[in-house]
Length: 285
Figure 1: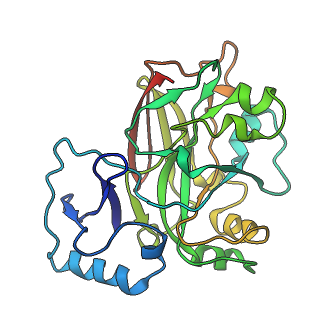
Figure 2: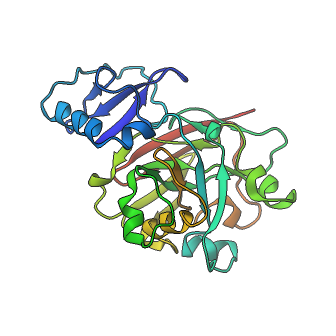
């Protein structure tokens, strides 16, 4: 299923995109697309049955904002330097263990919402990423196979980053990762049963129409199941938590000088095969 949330920011309602491309209203069937729903197999079954029976009312998508496909996100765990090609372009050694940092849930916006360039920023960068949404409580998992079994679905994430704040201002990466609007998510949460192999997905990103990133999740150093297993050794993952699993080569940080960092007026578009497409215009904060 392709689950999404539509409407004005803060007042989104649940919806479903059916196999024919028609937007369907889920507000009479479930309260929201969130961790509580993803952990409830019977509720998901009712949604699936209603969709297959053609019982869900159609929505007019004209002018309708698409919000983040997941509400009430608990935490966003991010994995850094998780692609062989990205490590090479930045001159970094592939890590022996996953690099873990966090983004606050309030960085999340819709897939087509405005992204704000922070005040004082000169190095705002782009990163297309596969987002993993947890569907079952995960703690001390024993294998990558168990890790995959705890995934409810997948989505497109844009891990916007401010490299000066991240790398040159001391401390951890968090200062360059948690600026407002720095995690567009969606358009859809695609349930795991529709993603046969999360290690064979194509990721692409364009800036002002120019292709910048063209990668595949096959290049991940730590694949999805292993990432979930690993993170579960250090923290409990709950339904509705999100893991951003890293970005392939092609970010501004890895380009020759002068590096083409983002500015107000730029337009970024990104997509992952089967998971949909995003488009953001940048403005000054």
